[in-house]
Image 1 (cartoon, chains in turn blue, green):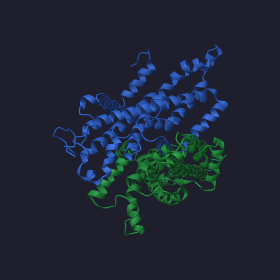
Image 2 (cartoon, chains in turn green, orange):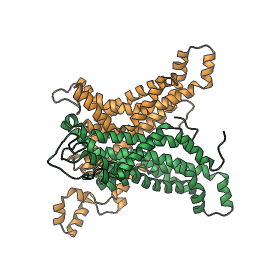
Image 3 (cartoon, chains in turn purple, green):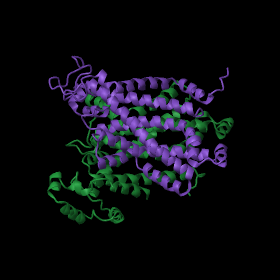
Image 4 (cartoon, helix red, strand yellow):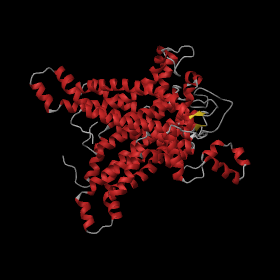
Length: 287
Length: 302
C-alpha cells in the first residue's frame, strides 16, 4: 500500500504522530486546558479574585463547585484562571526563549569562527548553572511578577534551543543545496530564511513542546516557593503552596488537590505530545 | 571563567545595593547629592571593570559580603548550610544511582516482559510530577497519616543523635533520589541492551559461559560506562531539585536559603550561593571526566 507522493514527508510525520496513542491523549487534554484558559471568564463568572468572607474554607458544593479557599475565594475559578496563567507562562516563555535561541543558533552556526566561539562560551556559561538556580538569581534581582517569571524562564532556558539550532545549521551548511544556493548568488539572510529555517522546524517543535512543559513546571515550582506569580493573579503552584499549612493539608484537600492534579496532568500531556512529535520528526529514535 | 562573566551581567541589574540597604523612607529623605555621596562611600559609583576587580578579589579571598536578609556574613551562613545540603545531595546520589542502575539492568534483562514495561513507564510519570507535589504527598501519607517519620527540619528539638538525623533525612532523600533514579533507569537500560547485543557478549555466550556470568561479569561493567557521564550531567538537576525539596521539608540547607534570600531580594546572598553551586558543578564535571578515563582506558583526557 503506497502513499501518494504529494507532500509525503509531512503526511508521514503526521501518520507517525497519530500512531502514538498517548500523544493523541495529550492533544485532547491540552485542548481542554486551553479552552479552560480561554473561557475562564465564562466558566467561572465569579472570578478568581472575589473574596467571599461569608464562606471561607467551604467544602465543594453549596454554590462553589470545588469549594472555597482560606480567604473565601472560589477554588474552581482559581483553577480555571490558573490554567490561563500556566498557558501564558508556558507559551510566552518558550516564544521568547526560542526567539533568542534561534537568533543565537543561526548566527553561531552560520557565521562560525569568532562569533561561534563567543556565543557558545556564553551558552556554556548559562548551562553550567542549574536553570532553577539561575531563575532564582534573576528573580532576586527583578522581583517576582507574571512578566518577570516569563522573561526569567526564557532567559534561563534559551541555550537549549540555541544548541539545537546551531547543531542543525552546522549539519545543513555542508549540504549541497546550500552550496548550490550560495553559488547562484543567494544572499545569506535569504539562505537562512528560505533554506535553513524550514529545516529547523521539526527539531524545534520538539524543543518547544518540552520547553512549554518545563516552563509550566517551573512556574508552578516558583509560585509554590512564593517567588513566582504574585496574588491576586491565581496560579496552580500558589494553590498547592497552601498545603504547607497543616490544617489545609489534613482537613481541606479541595483547596490544593485540584490544582496539583492539573499541574501533573498538564505537564504529562505536554510531555506526551513532545514524545509523539519526536517520534514523528525523527523516526529512528526509540523510546 | 565564563561563570564570572554571567555574574557580572547580573551586577548591572537595576537597583543597586543602596536600594536594598536603605528603607524607602530613608531614601526619600535624602537629596540626590547625598545619595551620590553614599554611593561613593560604598564604591558603587565606580566604573564597571573596577567594581568587577574589587568584587573578584573579595570573592577569591573568601569575602562574599554581608547578607541583609540573614543578617550575617555570607561566608559564615554558607559554611553552615553547604554541609547540610551536601549530606542530602550525596545520600540522594548514592541511593539514586543504586536504585536507577538496579532497575535499569533488571529492565534490560527482562526486555519486553511486563517487568520491563512497568519499569519503563514509571519514569515518564515521575517526570510529570513536580518535586513539591511528590514531597507533599509523602508528608501527607508517611508523616501525617502513618505518623512514621518527621515532616521537616534536620533534628528534633531534644534529640541530636545520628539516628534522629537519619529519620529526618529519609523523606527528602527519597524524593531527590527517585528523580535521579528515574533518569538513570532509562540510560542504564538502553546502554545494557546495547552491550548485550554486541559481539563480545555473543562470543562469551558461544564459549559456553552461563547467562548469569555473562550479564554480571561481562556486560554489567561495560554498560556502566555511559551511566557515569549521565550522573555527572544530572548533578545540576539534583541541586535544583534540592532547592524545592529543602523548602518543603524545611531542611536548613543552601536551597531553602536561596529561596529565602530571593524572596527578600538579597542579591549578594544569592550570588554567594551561585558561586558555590557553580564551583560544585565544575568540580563534578572534572570528577566525571576523570572517573570516565579511569573506567574506560580507551578514553583519554585532552
